[in-house]
Image (cartoon, rainbow, N blue to C red; front, side, top):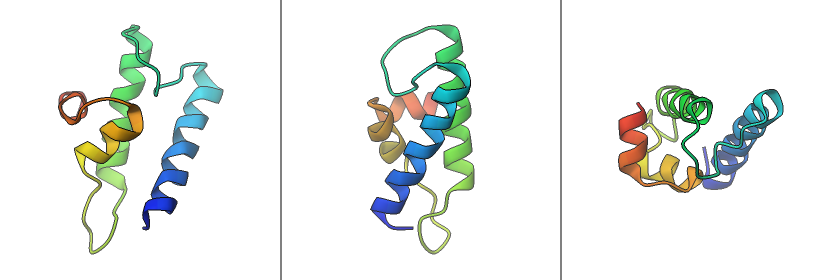
Length: 77
């Protein structure tokens, strides 16, 4: 999966979450529902998306997409 394909895929997941829940997981905030959605998103992306040669997406890449640090993603998972 190329960087552009990954970006499009992550945006589509985030937009689906936004459409269904009215929470944008890319915005900063600590509302409980937003935090729970971020946990679900991070777990799903980390466990189900393979970039190349069965290498998973990194915590830093997920964090960069969510406008957060890699440690936040690690804690969410």
